[in-house]
Every structure is written in structure tokens, then in C-alpha cells.
Amino acid sequence: MEVILQKKEDLRKRLRLKRLSFFELATIIQLTLAVFCYFATAFTPLSRIQLLVIKIPNFLFILPPNPNVDTTKITRKYKAVSKYLVWGNALFWAIVWMIFPPQYNYFKTVKSVLSAGIHSYNLTWRLANSLEFEFDIEVVFDWIANKLGENEFSQVCIKVKEILIDEPNVARINTPVTVVGDVHGQFYDVMEIFNLGGEVPYTNYLFLGDYVDRGYYSIEVLSIFLLLKVIYPCRITLLRGNHETRGITTTYGFYNECKVKYGSEYIWELAMEVFDFFQIASIIDNRIFCIHAGLSPSITFVEQLSLIDRFQEVPPEGPFTDLLWSDPFSSKEGFKPSARNAGYNFGSKVVDKFLKVNGLELILRSHQLIREGYEILFDGKFATVWSAPNYCYVMNNIASILELPTDPNLSNLKDYFNIFVAVPTNERVKPSEPDPEEKKSSTMEYFN
Image (tube, rainbow, N blue to C red; front, side):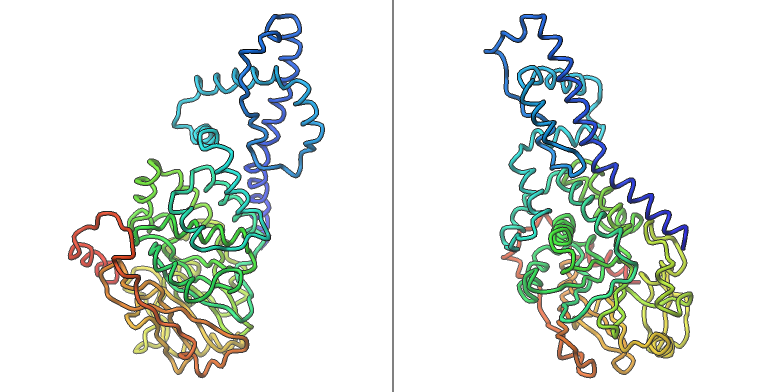
């Protein structure tokens, strides 16, 4: 436990450095250049060339405000030497562009901010910081559909990690809440989920993982979930699925999508870092245990989940892996190795024991394609919710979300499932599709 706490503290320091160190560095550089330019131009005719002065924006004021820097003194000094600082800025960035090649992500990010302009950057930051922002789903989705820039996406990722690092492995939430299963990058079907379940912040949401891969719009789906987490951190809970890992995303689409849409793997790397912060499980009303996939023979008590170091890539085996890969099998008792080559299959006795020792009533998960949208097993003690209709655009399945009211009657659990179908093809914009039979074949290989 001490090792995990120390790792969290190290991560906090790294996040502070990522967010604040360049603000402070930029301030020091700007003030140093200001002093240098002041004395240098005092003895040259440069200060008298007023007609050639181009008002290049100060980079310090393009960045979001840093709460740890006293900007009053900085602003006063900036105004005092602004005309000389313009030339210093131009010289500084010219040297940067000459020395550093474009593949350096850091300076590529700086360049993207400058080229994108103050308006788009401030729009991102206003969305990420505003507590009074009213969630207009059409506006936000349209904005994200125009592709979030690398720098904006990076800033949102940093904000999400700052929120998640202080949240426990097991999220404790209360009803009413709407539970959503796998969505797999199906952007338009996610829009339909918000239309059915209600907009944030008027509806609380718990997502069970598998946000990316398979669908055409994993980046857009992930972006909206991350933005919602930043704007309404108490209204949305994001659990990690088996597809929120480096190995799976390089195989099933997300990695390639990032390279195609952004021309590099930088966005994919940012997303992988955020996935390492996602929570493992959730408990609703101290009654319902929520996980992406299933149970582990190494986990008897819920309290054991707090001992898992979640701030890492999911290992090839162990309890962390089991929770993201295991499946129920009504014909099996105990734990048996899974045909997926990860996790286990388990039966009703395993479920009964886990619920009894932890004082719970229901296990809720996603992970498996259910053609009817949901499935209830083991005398109503175990349920699967699947939220990706017409999975991979070829499976022709329906989907569901689980809308739990305050103090739900779990004996009538099926009454709370809201069934829906895929958004019609003529209402979606999609890239060129591969051959349907080839895509269906690869999908069935995944399930087998």
C-alpha cells in the first residue's frame, strides 16, 4: 500500500510539472528577454523603428492562467517593455524553429497552439474549466467532430488525470444513475444514448469501459467522455475496460485511427496515459458491484481492490487482468481458465460467495456482446449490459442502458433496462467501410 501511495505522489508531481513548469519557464524567459531587450535597445536605434514593430501575441497570455504565478507584477513589467519584448519574442521563437526539428512533440504542440489561434484554445479551456457550462450535446459533438487539436486534447488529458489521481480504485456512487456498457467508438450511437438517458449534468452516468476500438469514431467518443469528466467530475464515472490498453488498441483500431486522423501516434500515447488513471470498479448504493468484465480467484473482498496499482498498463495476468477479462458461464462452477487466454470463466457459486462476503446484492458488468442488449443470470444476481447496437456495423444486435432510480427494486431489474437500436445508416456520416464479410470474420475471431 505504501508503494502505491508513493507512486500516486510521484504522479502528482509529474502532473504539476507538466502543467505548471512551462508556465513558469515561459515567464522567466519572457522577463529575461524583456530586461535584455530594454538595455540592448537603450543604446541602439531599434527602439525608434516604430513602423516595423509587429504586435506578435505574448505566448504567456495564450496559455491558460497559472494559479501559482503572480501575474500582476508580470503584467506590469510586460507593459513597461512590451515594444522591446516583441522583438525578443520573435527572435526566441525563430531560434526555436531553426534548432528543433518538427518531430519534437513539445514544440509541435507549441506550434499547433499558435497556429490554431487564441479563440479555439480558449474555447477548449472554457469548456474544461467552467462550472456553469450548460451541456448542449449538439454543439459539443459538432465541435469535437471537427477534430480536437493535439494541444487541446493534451490539456484535457492532464485535467482528467488531475481529477482521477485523487479518486480511489473503487468509486462509490448513489442512485439515480444510468449505467452504460461497451460503446466501442460508435459515435452516433453514443449520441443516441445521451438522447435516451438524458443530458449531463441532469443525469448521472457510470460507464463500464471499452470506449475505443472497432467503431470509426473512437477519438470523438473518448473526447466527449473526457470533457464531461472535466466539466462534471461528480456526474460521470469512467471505469477501465480491456480495450483501454496498449496491446489491444494497437490491434483493434484505435492506434491506426489516431495515426490516420492526426498523422502521428501522439494522441494515442496521451490516451494510453489517461487510461492508466481510470478506476477499476464501482459500488452503487452499497448494493451493486460494477466491473467491466468479471471476478478473479485472487479477489475475495472488495477492499482488496484498493491494493491494486492501477496506474500502469494492465499486466498479462493477475487480479487486475481478471477483472477486465473474465466471463460468467452458467454451466461451470468455480474458476476455470478462459478461452480468451486472459481471465477466467466462473459460475453461480462464485457469484453467490462474492456477494455474500461483501454484503452485496448484484454484480453488473459489460464486456460480452449480448444480442438482446442485456442478460440476467444466476437468479438475478449477475447482469450484463451491452450498449453498442449493430456492433462493428455488421452484428445486427440491439443494445441497452440500465437506468437505476433511487432505491431500485433489484428483483425487477429487467424493468430498468432501456432498449435501443443503432442509428440508421442514412443519419450517420462514415468513412469508407471494409468488405462486410471480412469485417464480420475478424469480429467473430475476436469472440472466439
